[in-house]
Length: 206
Image (tube, rainbow, N blue to C red; front, side, top):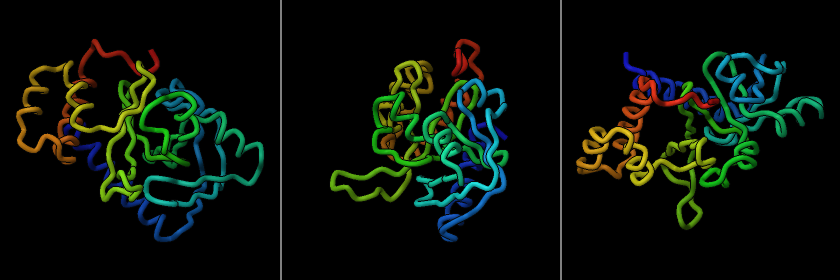
């Protein structure tokens, strides 16, 4: 199975888990793996391990996490990049994002679902429209480490990303529905495949 489709399956699994958590309103997990740098994330070496955190899904895309000590909560909010629940559920600290990146992360709150490879990282989140009403579907938010920005993945952002692979860009812009979410997602995962296989693309931490 291609990497792109594995990520789609992962997105679905995470969405289902988070929705179930939201329905239960509160969920306790035995172990929270805490990562304080991208080096530790990519090495799968947590900097700390916390037990029995309180976790609540305010929405499937904004997760509340709190520990039972002030020291642990301080570490989570001020020193942590991301946390992992088990082997596959990753959440990024929106406070860390807002402290280190410009762009479309400014309205994010709490902990947001995170997906990454060694070369690329992105989130899934629901924003609001011009009138402040939540969108009906989640969008992908691309973390641009070189520019220190987070950008919502719309047709303009994706077209710019695909400049690295002109054949893929031509296929994308030729699509009749190139502005639609499902088309943007498909070609983003095609881009992800290319990036992961491209030896000229550096790792996130380089």
